[in-house]
Image (cartoon, rainbow, N blue to C red; front, top):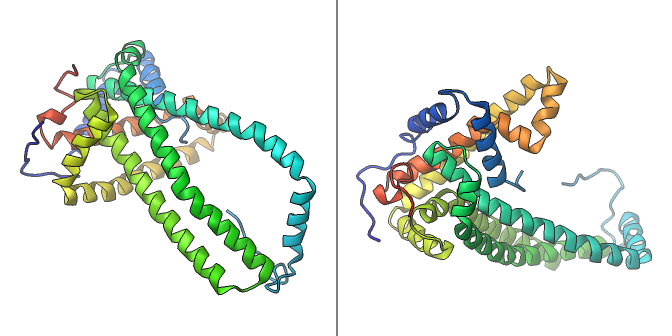
Length: 308
């Protein structure tokens, strides 16, 4: 598919139509049933998303004889069999739950786009209509998650090992260098994986919604779009940070107001109910990315082009 060459791409222009679209979708007229249905799709679309301190004084000794370190080590060794047994049960359960949430979230992404783009409150229709789209997105995210886990998990494991080495042997230049390198690699990989996930949700999902059932094919179109609009995409990512901060501030304000009423505060903590309460903010964020994408050509306009 050929890409159009729009004259002007703005991160500001989509704000007004996104706000107006959310107003028409949720408030004109206000329909509680519609609100709850779209809220369910929004909740499904973000399902599953939702440190340590240091002490002073004599708590740590860099001479290889740290009592806290040895106490932890002795405790782990003393209960190693129990730790392995519990881990063998808990870890597979956690993995199964995470995979199930990823599958539901992948299906929910298309349901939410369907509701926002068409100003509709439907669950069964998009669930069935975009089943193959969601399954393809799910497989892509599983592969990406596995690669990200290896790429981040290995440096993290190296960091933990380097930390234990320093605790056990004291100051060690090699361990310091290894720890610094592992932290740097972890940060770089985490940012890269985060960007891939962000572009997948904001651009690949709408492209799939319109043109293809395959996430790989959707990413090919997205890469072509990014490759010819690098500066605009960088500005988009930076502006998304601003939008997230503003939304977080508004959500915090709602929470603080809700603190005046204990019942309201508790409702905000309930996953689905919290999504329903914050639905205008969530819908705006989704609509904004769709209106931004529309600027690159009619082939990316989910509001006027009916999916095949």
